[in-house]
Image (cartoon, rainbow, N blue to C red; front, side, top):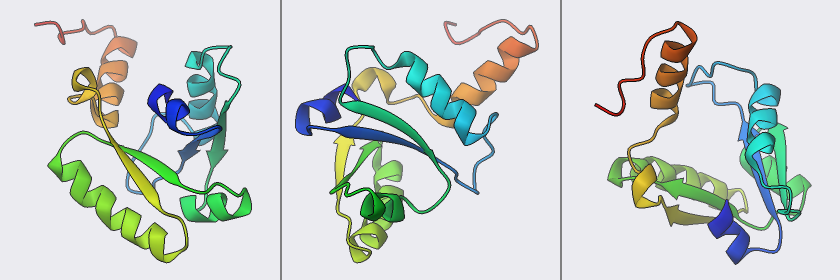
Length: 127
């Protein structure tokens, strides 16, 4: 988010539904969790829950570009396909490489860690 803030006057973090994934919470709860970690002074950042196409949100709210983070070549291939579709729908995409310390973090890994903590299992990520 912070790097996107440096590139754009306004940033909308869109918490969307992906039918191919199985998040542990609905999009409103996930959006609330994201809002909770956005620093108070970041008045140019808005967090929104959305259940439609990202390009539809962008067109309806005059968002000129989609910013996507990529961790590795596999991400880039998948994101490139989405970017091509969104471009054909009138919304370009900008890719930002993940910071090195976040390259290994995925939503699946985060959910697995969260489930383990919820069930009283120790955090083994430091081993």
